[in-house]
Length: 124
Figure: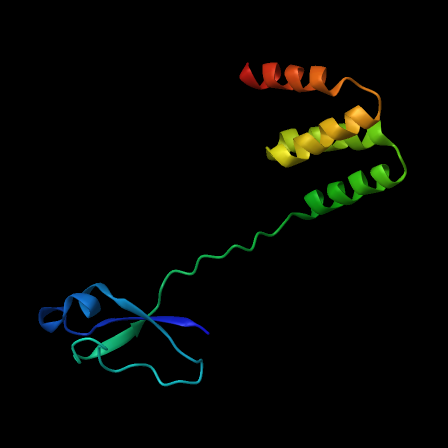
């Protein structure tokens, strides 16, 4: 059920709730409120900022991610690690960096040494 925001039409004659605005759960097909639920003064529905948690990924990122998965499925751990490592540096993604280190480890590299080297490199 959507949340709608309302605010007074006349700030001089408003209660604290409608002066600062209030939220109401309403069905989409319900008529907008015309008066404050607390004091009965006229209110209007306001348009609020919409915050979205949706993040779009670039085509390059999707292609790189697919290539890393392809290398991992084929057991080409060093290829997967190197690609993930370079891409993680480029987009500043810590989880991808961790994945790269795991793939380096599977490829037989000393992942702890690589992690220390990475930290030194980032502190420069």
